[in-house]
Length: 125
Image (tube, rainbow, N blue to C red):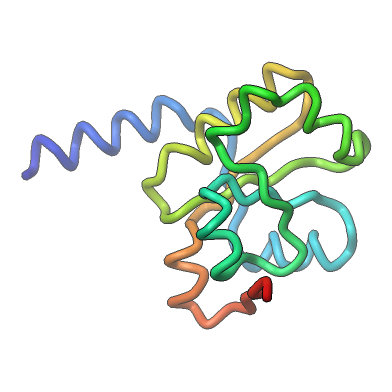
């Protein structure tokens, strides 16, 4: 267990060159219209509840990234999140977005921690 935990920390740390965005900062920046929030979870999970104003961009669909990026404001930073703090989809999404020339970061935690903190959640009906 200890070796597994260390391996996970090393994997996440090695992949996370940029400072992650804390939840309270994301809320503030999103309210001010300074960022585009990207939910990289599967569409079904997004529909069940997401950060208010987030756009669904499932990680599995990031292969069509260039087409999808054209629909996002090029002047805004991108902040990606997924299931939880250790979900690697957000890390990988940030890498792909930056490879496409966009400034991107990941939410410090994920949707699980967001919900547990009692932060606002939108549900698509």
